[in-house]
Length: 136
Image (cartoon, rainbow, N blue to C red; front, side, top):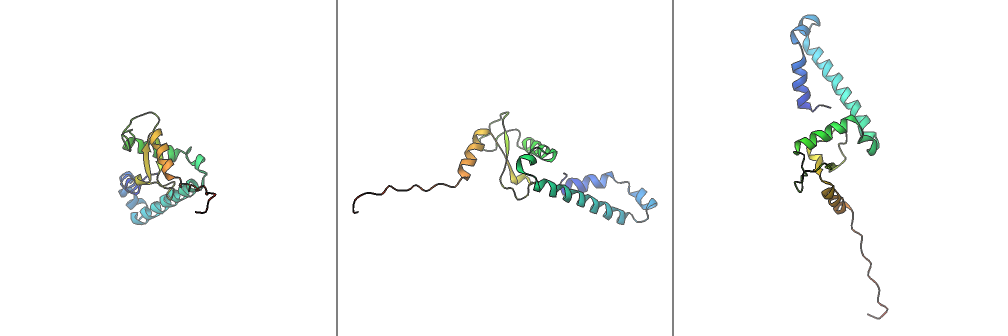
């Protein structure tokens, strides 16, 4: 899925505006029609992606491409410790925009930092005090 900036730039460059003006009358209405068609297609894809079970989502072409983009942007290094290993993982900071993740929604982590990160996410259990048998 393209970002809005990528879409607008690529979309405008790919159009032969003179052809639209001559063949179809008003190129403006054709442009609006194509934008709406693209938006509907993107939204349809998002709906499918956002409703998949998480393990299935991680197998989609969209996620594999998005994951590669994030790894490349991070220089193939853990963003916490700087380690460059083959076992890097892309972690979701939140799942609110699953299927249309922003860069800040994702972080590249090595296996060790990812494990440590999840340990801090878990709620801490309260320890029960042992009661004394005495009066006091």
